[in-house]
Length: 106
Image (cartoon, rainbow, N blue to C red; front, side):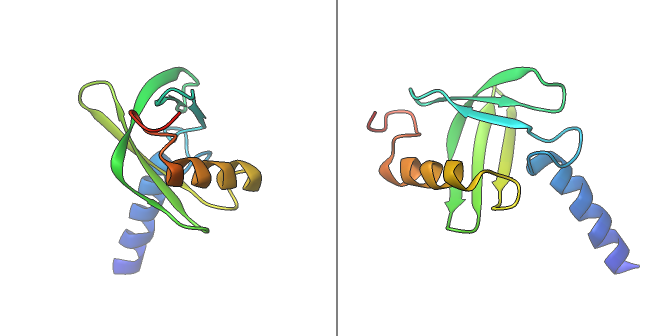
């Protein structure tokens, strides 16, 4: 029973955090180059977002935290099998150099 609850919880959580997984998840992430980001969720409408501190970056996993509006926050999990490898590499470089955050080097 516990395994069933954990599995169900994972699917609900994954649906809102992993791009392309579930209807409410983020389907498109676009960095605009000036510290701003655009996120498109299941409805396809782009929403301006701000990257928050506290994410995680490694070669196999990237977790980005965003603020959308005043009260809404969204975490996005990027894995090698749900994202383009070259785009992930470029994103890791930009995040490490501080280019993708407000006030970072442009």
